[in-house]
Length: 258
Image (tube, rainbow, N blue to C red; front, side, top):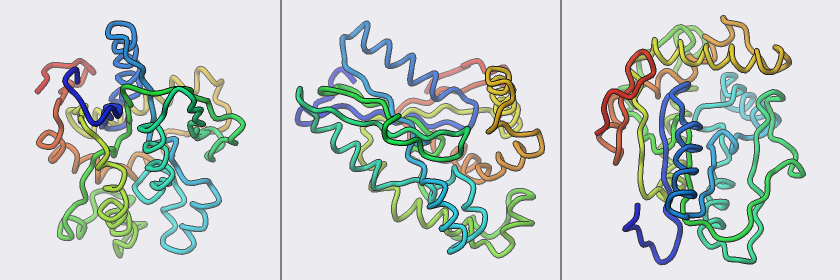
């Protein structure tokens, strides 16, 4: 990172990891380290904040497949908004004032622009985190068999997973091609991912008093199944694509780095 030099533009670091691995924590800690120890100006962006609005997803669900009503998978983000934002960040100067999008998960909708945080001035490092950041598409053959109950029962003809994969192949490279350095947080397996995501949900419900936006255990398990296919795909391909891989055990401890 110290040797990075891209025509004076900021270094864009992608952080990929399954649900519950700690991407946001990693980005926050890395940002504080770079700012306080190296004096670098950092900006953290989550791919979650690029979700389409609820109305846009409802329209997509009507037009393509009902499963696209749920946020999360490729095809449910505003890729062009993300690319334009990153390009504005890369060209920011002392007079630049940027509005950073935010998604309200409790409302399952994009927050109003008056609630978007503002960032002023240039940036040295952008930390771009998300469960599918940098993920390549699967092969057509890999899409044939369902990987879980959700796909077997609600995507029997493969329309949803094919659409998701097509978006990952055609749209998302416009965003991911801007990444300079890739970090992958490697969970041990799907069982750990499910346990960690359920722990996250319990903690969020405790903080919020189980207000709107929280999910029951069956709802959460079904929600996680939306991500399972590409999470398993990431287990296979991301270690060979990332610049740094942090490997976790079932106790959520980093046991090695590659």
